Length: 294
Image 1 (spheres, rainbow, N blue to C red):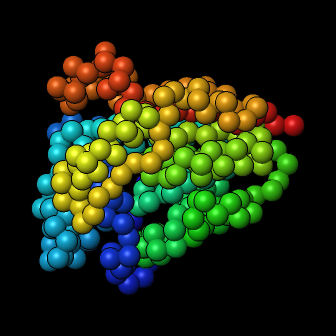
Image 2: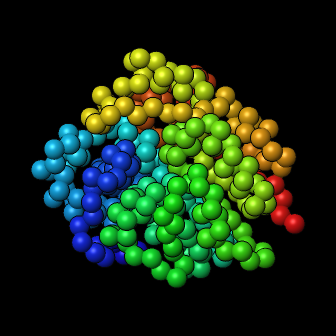
């Protein structure tokens, strides 16, 4: 597939949250490692352009990214997660080649380009400043559109096709844990009510992980680890994906995945935790069916 090409002037990186650049660079750096888990030359090209700005940035994280310095474990776990989401979307499109995929809180990911089957319709949803950044690098098409709105403003649902027989897949990678619990619940229930029969694939943190992040040490852990300008704390977590099934009738957990399912050699010492449920399920990906279509 073609590489990303800028469609306008240089984007304003100061308007975009620093955390959105971590998975972007993790994928780019993994693409250049020996025996890569996943390769995306378009992302490599984008980060090379960004490095022209990042190398002279006053933000420590951006200088660090330009120098290619991220922990190897981050490259591995993020790349495994990205590859898994790609596989889920491809499997959905094999069943529903004309399906509609909606990337909630898409960040700077460009999954649509990696999985495009030539027939799907795709919507990338995120805050206006994130969409503005994306527009500078990747144009919309008739089948691939942007929605510049908060995921918590449910009016974005009005932008989706309202056609009999449409099949929807909603994906939320690296999103739900940053949102208030009541807002996550309201969003999932709204999807269940409005798009009955759709599927939701989302990354989830455990309630134990959330509790640890809210300790004095945990609040600054991500900032210290990645040289962020401010503390980043997760808000939403559950003990089990089955907790979400109880939010509304018809929500059904149909799959769960975590990094350790892959038996990836690059996990190295992390693999020692595979049999420790509390660690194994710190963060995972859950797949739900949201009711039954009429």
